[in-house]
Amino acid sequence: MSKLYGIGASVVILGAMFKILHYPGADFMLVLGLTTEAVIFFFSAFEKPHEEYDWTLVYPELAGMEDPDEEIRGENRLSPTQELDKMLEDAKIDGELIESLGSGLRRFGDAASKLSVTVDAAAATQEYGEQLSLASKNMESLNALYAVQLESSANHMEAQNSLIEKLNSSINDSERLADEVSSLANNMSQLNSVYGGMLSAMNINKN
Image (cartoon, rainbow, N blue to C red; front, side, top):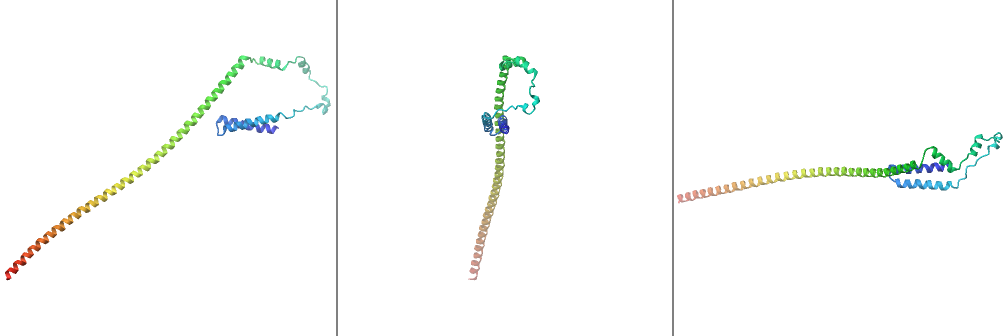
């Protein structure tokens, strides 16, 4: 049973530690520890009481030996309640002190509850900060992607503008070429007319 007591106590301590430090699974560990302790107490009820050995059987010289102070204490022996009252009186523990102790324990419990709320709020604040940091990183990534796309679009527009300028230049060159061809055709027509007139004049002179 001593090993069982030790194992149960360790489980109870672990459950209390998980609950105090707010580790994950604290409620489960606390319930497990208290349940283990309850089971151990249940089985301890069936444990045999400690047997007092008669050492006089082993050491006969101990027979008949009695503590002389025991007789004096036996004559002035008090009941358990009287002994407790006397102990409290000697320790100067009265009802006011016990009430003050109870108030202190209640205040300690209230402070522990407030501390738990504060710890939970701090954990929530930390989680919110982590989410904000993650959102900020995502925004930075989106901004970088947008900048790359914007630069690519600008380069594409610049290439299109350059192509349009080249096309316009080609169109202008084509128009100038057409004008020159038209002028050349007119000149050729005029030359043909002059040449035709000269031929006509030469034929008239021959006749």
